[in-house]
Length: 66
Image (cartoon, rainbow, N blue to C red; front, side, top):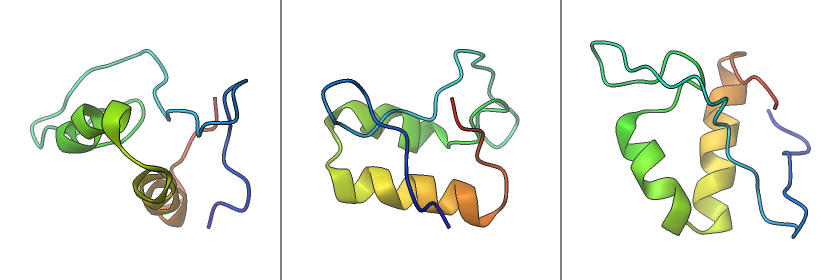
């Protein structure tokens, strides 16, 4: 579980994006491990959604903090 998610300078939750975008056959980014739907929703998502994404990545032990 993510106890402390990365934050931007303005205090908003940082994106898990690693700037190495490449989708696999399931439309999941092989770098940040988010689905295409999660990637597309991120910029307009609220903090609850963003925390949910970080928790999912973390629960699988796959989240790579920027």
